[in-house]
Image 1 (cartoon, rainbow, N blue to C red):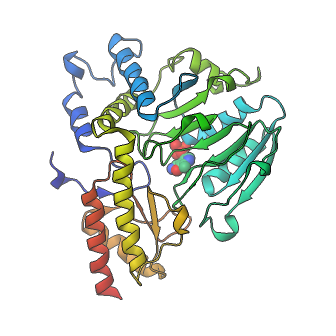
Image 2: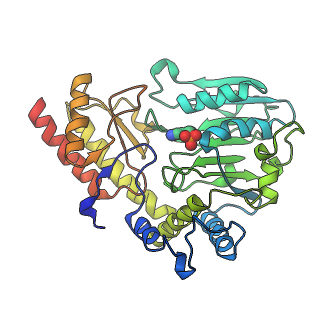
Image 3: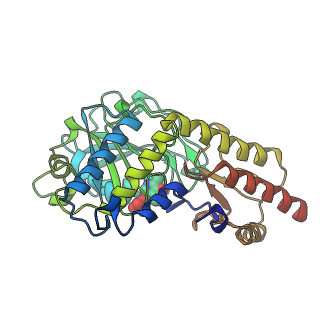
Length: 363
Ligand code: PMP
C-alpha cells in the first residue's frame, strides 16, 4: 500500500490512522507476531493479549504522564456512555454538578446528568453559536458540587479551551474525545478525563476513561454493573470481553506517537498544521473562520465561504481531488477540516493549495 492509493480524510471521526500502523496491522492480521491467530480471534485472557493491553496502558501512562493515583480504563459505549457513567459514579454527596456548555456534546452530557442530579449551567456560549469559550473563575462553581464538567475541544464548532478552569476542590471532568494526545495536558488538574477512540487513538469501539482513584467506588447499588468504574478498575479493564482489536490498534498508535517524540512533538506538529491553515483562512477575503482567535481548535478547523451552495461545491470538488469529508457537521453546515495527529502536513498543504485554486476560480 502506498500513499498514492489513499485519500486525505478530513473526517471528524472516525478519522485517519497513521499509515505505518495500518500496514503493521495488515502484516499481522492473520497471524499476530507469528502466533498463528489474529488478535480478532484471540482470547482476551491469553498471554498475547495480556501483553497487548498491559503495554497499551503503560504507553498511554507514559505519553500522558498519568499519575499513579489515576486508573486507566479501556471501556465500550463511546464518549456517549461516559455522559451517563460520569454522573452515575461521581454523584456521591450533594448530587450537584456544574456544567460549561460550549457545544452539542457538552449539552448532551448535561442532559444525561440532569436525569440524576441537580445541574447548574455555569456559562454557555450557545447564544453566539458556540463560537467562543466563556471565561469562568473558581467563584462561579458551587463549592459543594460533586463535579464540574467541560468539553475541552468542541469537535463540531472548532473551539478549544485556552485554559483549564480553576474549580477549587471540585473535581473537573473533561471530555477530550477530539483532542486527547494532541497536546500536553496536566492530568492532575482533572478528576476524570475520557475520550472515544475514533479520532486520535484508534478504531471506534473503545473508550478511554482516566479517573482519579478517590472518585471510584461511590456508584449506588442500583447502578448497573458495567456502568460502575470500580468494576473496571478492579479488573484492569478485563471484567468482561473488552474491545480487543481496538485496544490492540490503539496500542500501536501509542507506540507510534512515542517513536515520533511523544505528545510534545505531536503538539508542535499540530500547531504547525493548524497555524498554516488558520493563517491562510485569515489572509483570504473568500473564506472566514467564525471562531474567536484565542479559542480555536488545533484539531477541527471550521470555515465558511458565506454562501451555502459555494460551500457544497467546495466539498464536492475537494473530494474529486482526493480530500474527503470536508463538510461541516450536519447541524451547522459549512466546512470543517479535522486535522488530527495522523493527518500529515502534506494533507494540509494540499488542502491550502486547493483552497487557493478554488478561491481564484470562484471569487
Ligand atoms: N464528545 C465529543 C467531543 C465528540 O466529538 C463525540 C463524537 N464525535 C462524542 C463525545 C460522542 O462520542 P461517541 O460517538 O464515541 O459516543
